[in-house]
Every structure is written in structure tokens, then in C-alpha cells.
Length: 369
Image (cartoon, rainbow, N blue to C red; front, side, top):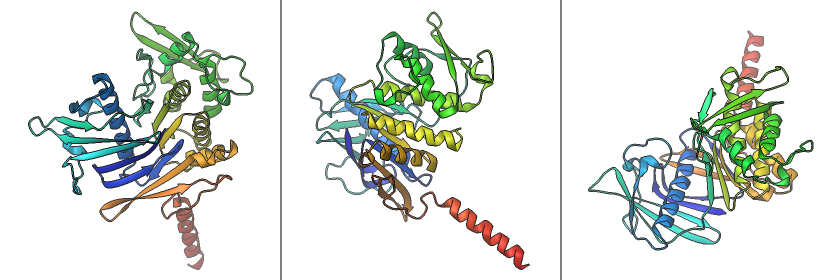
């Protein structure tokens, strides 16, 4: 499990140390470093896999940074802090990962002779983890999706339906903790349907892959219709939730799994957001390390309730991130055995109270006039 990540001169962080747990929640103001933490984890994992492919010992290699995150970032100097602190090794930035009791330092430097290349040196290799990552810009409703990449979810979730078929073919077994009471089948697709229904209401999925065209077609059905329909006739919720459920269940079947999610609340009703939080908490409870970036209090409420319910609240941590002058302040919030938060800093999901106060004052002003 990833226990801690240390950042030096990486993007908005001059120096930062972020503790991780089985369930880690990143929340806070816009542009406060949440995505930066996630990108550092993805870059670190990419670097580690690159080192593995080159063999046990490796000195220095170059990375095409635009192939790492699933979207273009331009020149790698955009990853370097604009107000760097001194580094004794004179690297542009450093990512240090603490995992399973070991500490691996990865030093990065923009290649002066080739400004689009990023050179990296690592002082070892970390324990390999099976990292699944879904970014915030997931694929919306489509009549069909590209099939392929049968070893995990794509960054945009496009191959989610294909993975369901692949998991059924290979009899992937999902943890008992994720089983619904009314679930009769052990098929992966049945687990997906049950969790989609738990979050969005009764749903049935019909999946077919055309291997000649390498596309997967998905049709959905609920209690309101007799025949299934293509996703483009439904809202965005189904298309945005499906990759999360598939990636989470797939991760639960892997060794040393890590699931990183951005904005799982997108296009979801508050009730569905809460249930999504409970699903993510159950993934953590059955051994998946879950790292989630969210702006939703309902996601966090669902997580802390479920972690407390399964008596694993000590495995949950919330990081509230905010601007403080020219730097980022990270407030660490623990979850009690009863699901209560150890602190509630200013700006941490208190906007509803502020809005209600303003409405009350407006009403008070009208009464006086």
C-alpha cells in the first residue's frame, strides 16, 4: 500500500508530504493541488513501470510526458514549481513514494538539449501495484465504444463495457463483501448490474462485442421500458458511473490494487453520490487502496458512514486543501469509529450554512422594511 508521498518543487507544491491510507479523500478549493497529487502518483507509477521494463538496475531514462496522463500537458517544464526551493541534487523536481515500508526517490530534470523530454533517475524500484485511474473527463453516452485493453480501465473509461465481457470470459471472482443479498450469480457482469442498480436505480445491461470491428455495444434497460435502449437515449449518469463500477470491481480482483478517481459525483443526484461513496468505501474495506478527488460532501458522507459501519474508519483519511498566501495548506482530517470527522475547518463544505444565513438575513431585512 502507498503510505505517503513527498513532493519537492512539483507544480504548485514547493514541499509537501501527504499521508495515504486504504481510503484517501482529496478535497478543497479549485486549483488547490488535488489533481497535482494525483498526477504525481500517476507519474511515479509510470516511472516505476518504465524501470521494470528496463530491468532491475537503471540509471537514467527520458519520458515523453504527454504519454503519461492521458491528455497533453505541453512541455515538461510546466511540471516544475515556479517558486522552487533548493534541492541538493539539483533536480527540477522530486517525487518520493513510501510504500510497504520502503522509500523510493525519483528525481526529474528537464532535458536541456531536448526540452520536450523529461529525464528521470530513481534510487530503486517500489513494489509493483496494479493502478487503475479514471480522470474527470470520462466518455459520455455513445452508440458503441472501442473495445480492447483487457488488463484494466482506460483513463477515460471507454472500454468499461468491453472489460465486463472480458471478466465474464475469464471468471474473475469479486470479493464477498461486494455481494448484494439478492445476487444469485457469481458472474462479474451480475456484480456490475447490482451496483449500477444500487446507485442509479434498477438497471439491466446488454453487452455485445464485435471483434471484427473491435467495438463494444451497450444497451440499457430499466423498469420503465420493455426494450433496452442505446446509452445516447439516456442521461450522462449511466455512462459516467459504469467505468467507476467496472474499474472498482476489476481492481478488487487484482494483487496490490490502487484505484484513483477524479470527481465520481459527476452527473449524479445526491442520493446516488452517497451510495457511490459507500461503494468506494467497501472497495477499500476489501483491500483496494482508493484515492478519490471530490467536491461532494455526499461522497464523503457515504464514505465515512460505510467505513464506520464495517469498523474500518481508522483506514480512512481526508485531506482538505486550500490556498494560504503563495502556498497550499493541507489539513489532515481523521474519521472516528462512529464516522465523525476530527475537525471541520473553515471552507470545508460549510457553504450551505453560509447560504442559509444569507437567506435568513435577507428575510430579516424584508421584515424590517
